[in-house]
Every structure is written in structure tokens, then in C-alpha cells.
Length: 200
Image (cartoon, helix red, strand yellow):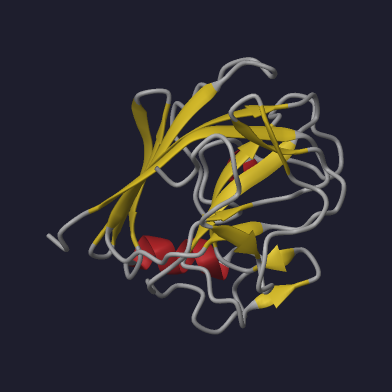
């Protein structure tokens, strides 16, 4: 378990030594981000080959995500620059135009999810992220919606057509904490679990 349902043990702020003093709360067995500029949070542990499972729920027009291959030296004004399992209100988010590469389940701005069916906003969803060797899988509500190899031509093409095309090292698999994003909207997380895997 990455979250015990009662405390913030095992987590800290991105690029910070401790957990944010505002912007995240523990509420009814959930990690809640009320969208009050608390910043992203990351696990204090790092992982190389792993399966990460979590439940999440968005508010209306909500936006968040789980990031991986996180290097704390690589960031911008929005936080970490890393691969992202996107979670967003596909239908009503209005802060920026959305396309299929920015819908729930996608590798944000790089590769779209296929046949992803998030539950209606306000209902819980279950997601899984599997990293084994150079292979990555995104799962949503029991269905695999995306699979890619970090060093494949398809990944390189997706990155070349994304906002990350000029980010050095962005494509690389690296040991990583797991990051939960504060995107200034309300989101809840629960049942955060990780299982380390063999490389093959």
C-alpha cells in the first residue's frame, strides 16, 4: 500500500523535502486534492519495474494524472515533465482544447488510449500502470487501453509531434517515484498500491 488511508506517510511534495502544508488532505480514506495550488506529490520510494494500481474520482471539469519516469531536475511552471497517465473530464474540461491524445487513459499528448471508457464524472474509476523492461501498459476499469515500448519508432514519432519534442531524456525509462498531479481542480485518490515486478 502506498497510502494507508489515514496519513501522508510515504509521500512528499515534488522538489520538496516534505509533504505540502496546504492543497492536499486526507479525507474519508482518500488523498484529496482540492485544487488549491498545493503542488504535485510524489512517493518517497522509487520503482523500476512495477505495477501501480489506484482508484480515482474527478470533479466536474476536473483534470489530474499520474506521472512516471519522473526526474526532479526536469520541470516547468506546471510541474514535472514526465510520462503521464492522463485523467480528465473528457466532455466538459474547458481550460484547453482536447484531442484523443489528451483524453483519459492516454499517454498525455503523445499516444491516445483505445476504447477507453471512464465512468461518469463523480464516479470512481480503477486504473493500472504496468512498467516492465521498456514496455508500458495503461489499464482503465479492467481493460488495457494503451501499450507502448519506450524506445520504439512509434513512441519516437509520438514524442516528435508533442510538446515534449525538445525535452532531453524525455523518452528514457528511468527509476521513478510515482507522482499525483495537482492541476488546480478537485480530485480524489484511494487504494494506491504498487507491486514490484521482474524485468522480464
